[in-house]
Length: 283
Image (cartoon, rainbow, N blue to C red; front, side, top):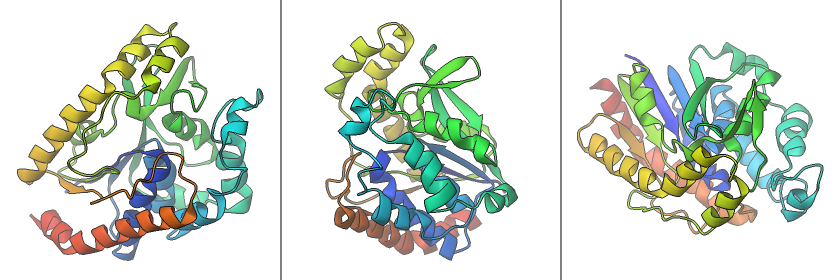
């Protein structure tokens, strides 16, 4: 049996998934294949390195820190990103809250990050390196339009993987996963609407018509994927974990109390579903 896991993004709302990951670590539940989108991979690597509680500490200690994110970073000509990438992806993991690269390197499974090619508007699924060279791929997967600058990898530029494939369960199935666990950051009944910011991104990326098309059609594609995913769940082909509520937590939430409440929701939901998950994996 090949166990796969798919973690949706959602920026700071992905603290729900962090709670789920910590329960999985308590239960010694690890996949053979892991793919994360945006924050799903950024937080997922701490799960794969078995650093239980690391994401919680990051959430409570650093997300409220003004060095972590804010409009001043977006307006800074040297940064031009709402999230302070040097602080978030360099200083925090390499100095302040050390990431265990050796433990991550020892993880025996496959790890991929979903990114969106700005030139084609299509999703690509990149293998995540096991050392500090992972940085650019992880940042690319997290690079939300407007809030981040596109990231160059090789000869191409990339943005957030969720633009082209928010929940890459189809890709995971194609990778040969016999059992698939999908962790969402939105409620099962959530219906995505085209965001107001799409008008801004249409102008911002006018030189890249394919990414504009992908952004314009994202909500429609997301909703179709959610519908199909829930059908697969009913058929017993995938196991879905989703919050019952997100408590109004948005992408850039910095209130540690609100973030902790959503993290605790992840712990609760995952704990309540552990037995059912074990049964699914046996079947």
